[in-house]
Length: 297
Image (cartoon, rainbow, N blue to C red; front, side, top):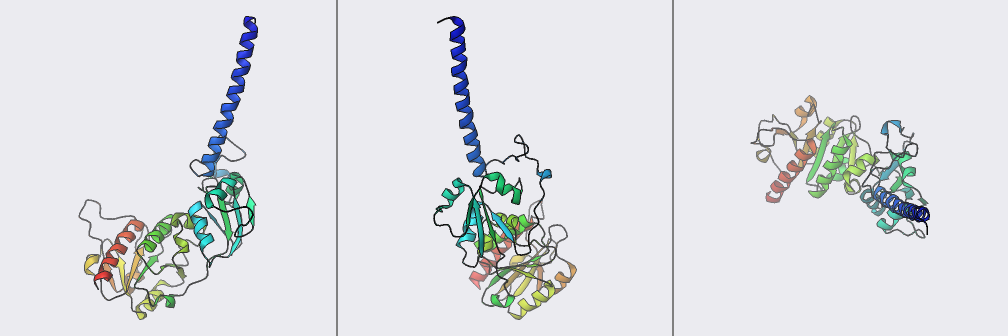
């Protein structure tokens, strides 16, 4: 074999090996994208995702899209959920342990970028999306037997509300109550942040917070508004056998009308240099303290 022929064969062999390894790398990247470990590039530009190019689709009033493995699994297990359509990759179906032959609702096998057309390129969807209807409306009177509820005074960030829901479920709160205005509605972002907790606790939206607090008082709740300038420490402010914790907006805190309506104002005792916490962190601490009090009451 001549030297030129040998070089030609080496190049051909190298080319085949390069193609093989490139295929393996692409398959590995696709699996990581389906698991939500890396973002999926948009079909228009495979080199990088441009979230600013994405436009959210117009949704009907009763249309909710949930995404993410934990979120969708919890929704599928919730008997009160009205399921419309499940869209998933084959990999996601396997991780959810759902067979193509017997899905819990109409099933569509899709690619990751099909889901991103609905939920956006920055959503960590993990290869699954569930179209559903909002959960049934809950009423305050259904909370008469609960010893602990959480009330949000215009907390606007769905990530904060989702994190608060997780803490509320962890500490056995009976509901998360919020206002219809200046608060997140039931959505994929809220549900993903709650990581399944939306299916486990009533999310009650009311029109007037002062009226809702008055109704809770009639049901026997002692309401405590959390304020960094509160006159007493939270641990010294508890009273009675039923507690309603009231958390304020991320920036402005409690509104004046709310301050005037709650049974007491209290603060978290923080001896360190920082005197305020993110509302979701503060809610978790307050829920823990409330549970400690109720256990002794």
